[in-house]
Amino acid sequence: MELTAPPGFTIRSKSRWPNTIVFPKELRDAIPDYGSRALVFDSVSGSHSRSWVPTADAARAQFGFLVHETGKLNGQFTLLVDLDSETTRALGKFLVELADRAEANKS
Image (cartoon, rainbow, N blue to C red):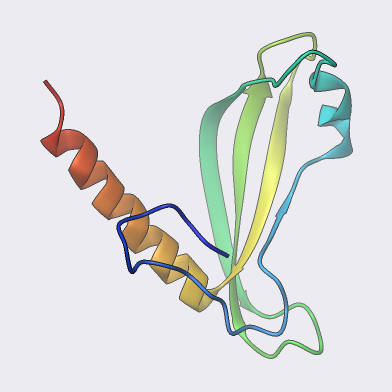
C-alpha cells in the first residue's frame, strides 16, 4: 500500500494477507455513468484482532467509515477497512503529519 506523502514515506506491508477496503454492494447504484460520486463522512468506529484469516497470523485493525451518499440513495453505508498493525500505525502517522501541514498552510 502506498500513500502520497513527502519523499521517502511509503507503506509496504509485510503481511501475508492484503490490506483491504470493502464497499457495500448497495453503493453500486450510487455511481453515475458520467462521473464520480461523493460520500459524506459521518463517523468512524474500530476494533482490533489477531488475524481472522487462518493463514495470516498477524495483528489486524478493522474500522468502519459510516458515510451517506449525496445522490439518489438514502441511508448510511459502512466502508470496511482491514489493515495490518504496521500499516495502521503508518497511516495514523501520515494523517497526523498531513493535518499538521494543512494547519501550517491555512491563511
